[in-house]
Amino acid sequence: MNAVPPKTERNQSAQVDKSGKPTFEWTLTGSSLTDTVRLIAGPFNVLPVIFVPGIMGSNLKAKAGGTPVWRLDTGVGGIPWGMLKGFATKGSGPRQKLLHPDRTVVDDRGKLPKNGKYSQSTYRERGWGEVGEGSYHQYLLWLDDQLNPAERNPALWQEYFQAEATISAPSKAGDKPKLFPGIKMGMPDEPFGAEKAPFQSITTDDLMARAKFLMPVYACGYNWLDSNAMAALRLQDRILKLIKSYNKGQYRCDQVVLVTHSMGGLVARACAQLDDMAGKIAGVVHGVMPTTGAAVAYRRCKVGMRDEDFGAGLVIGSTGQEVTAVFAQAPGALQLLPSQTYASEWLKVLDDKGQNQLSLPKGGESSYSAIYRERKQWWGLVNEAWLSPSEGAPIEWMDFEVNIADAERFHQDLIAKFHPATYVFYGADKKQKSFEKVTWRMRQGIAPDKRQRQSPKDVTGLGHGALREEGGTPAYVGGKTEVIPSFGMGMASTYESSYWELHCELQDGAGDGTVPCSSGASPLAQGGGSIRQQFKLAGFGHEPAYHDLKAQHTTLYAINKLAGIAKRPA
Image (cartoon, rainbow, N blue to C red; front, side, top):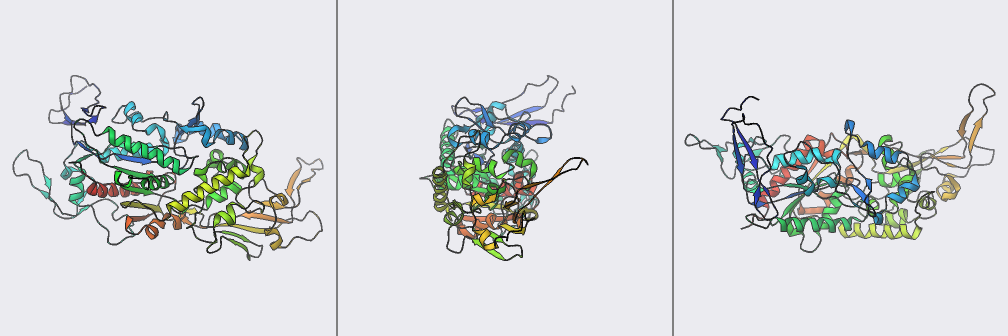
């Protein structure tokens, strides 16, 4: 090994041990390396950043025995092959048995970074094993590097360019440059599609304030099957314990910053409303949050994901039966449905001529009473027969209604409530088709006999038992699977006869593929002065949002701004 020139310097920032002392992790190198190693103990004010994942983004295990139930470790090609193999062959019943909030807890034993700057035990302590490796670890590593550079002088941070003359020249050899206060700085991709005027650029004051904080990056998984209100309590516990752990020895900590993905935003918002918690949180950055819900949640309960995303459907559920078996018993999942503040008339039934036969909920009407609690008619959220799948652990309609009531209360309590220092980004991409509405369209089928077809109005009023529903699209009114004999010319063929076919149409709007624009953009309209800035972005899908460089720069901008207003312990 060639010796590194003496002028080269390697830096290592301290971590904090359980007694509050600075400690360092270092891999021993060969004696031929003669460069200087600089161990940096400070800063001693700590502002931890906690990442809160979206639904299905936390690893889960069985409460009894600890067997992994939902493990998001990736393999070749970044695909969670274990998950795919485990769920692709599971029908509704086995899914229902496994994925129940009372039978599962967070699993912190997921994969950890192997080539990060810290030991795996450190990443484990920081909660990274609780969240999906493929979805989040790349971003968390990047964010930790950005927020905790070995070079603590913000005048030397390369991520920020000089919008004005900002840096003083060294007065003598060996001096390092420094920033003047009150000067505008810039970042790549700025102003990030900002929707609130005027856009406030990063300033030297923000960077100098951030430089006074150690900002370790944590993650907090939660049981996404259970109510987000319960997840909020788990996040509260993590925040309080983390603050306490950093108030030892030389270190001091008053607050944390939260960064969220998707449904994690609802968890963080609920946590910020708990007693005395808003003051423990310096601010929140929400990414692709379903602020008012997402109509796609209804659609997946009806027809699954097969025609929306075949690969994801193998895991989440290809059919309505597979999704409903889990969804109906999971308050957290139900809290993704369109809420009280979602646009009215988002569910439609059109006849074969495109004439409207049903639009719900009407203005002033609740989706809960009009759609979710509808027990008989076929367009209601849940087909009751699907609550008792073969080989499952059946639940009763009453159980489902309890969960729906939980979701309704949660939504009601969260309306227009945001932490007073909130930043938001959402997807508004025409190429990432999303469901603003869910539309059922009638088509005349191949009649099984010469009897008169029901009128479209009568079809709209049919119950579940009057349809042939297989948990996909289309569903059929009357008829059967017809067999055409081969007459010795190969295999027989089949077709579906019916009086009417009920087709659930595909996406009708822009967004990120899951959350439509209307829901993603709602914070600015609802949150008033609590929303410091909101960013309209494009170029990414919902699940991999934090892989996008523009989204990364947006969150870094927001964290810099929050560090600029965070409390600094005396």
